[in-house]
Image (cartoon, rainbow, N blue to C red; front, side, top):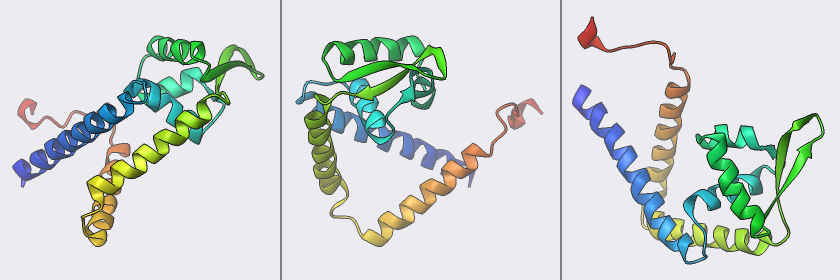
Amino acid sequence: MGRQMEQIAWDIGETAHALRRAFDRRAAALGITRAQWRVLARLDHQPGQRQVDLADRMDIEPITLCRIVDKLEEAGLVERRRDPSDRRAWQLFLCDKATPLVSRLHTLADDFSAEVFGNLDPAAVSDAQRLLGAIRANLSGLDPRSNNDRASA
């Protein structure tokens, strides 16, 4: 059973990587990078996020996000505003100019999903969603300080 669990973790990672690469190629046609579309998508779903919190959610260093936001701000797609509750922090918002691009990204994502998942059995897709949700729940419950390396025992 251990090898099978190791293999499914590998398969999930490889599938996620393949999905990202395929979508990135399509998004590049709109003139944006993966990092940029990730920021735009997250701000579309939750405007006003603090820059430091967004970096944490994206699992990137704050300075890396700062550079991405700098480019998006220069392009007139993202606006930084001082956080009224913490003058040292920035909140991020999409500019009106981003609306058509974000709309095209949503259309691109819808079309991409239809191509990738459209020929799959809807019940199998639901099963996969439940399985992936359970895996994420298991991961969120793990103690990051524990080391379950049996070889060291």
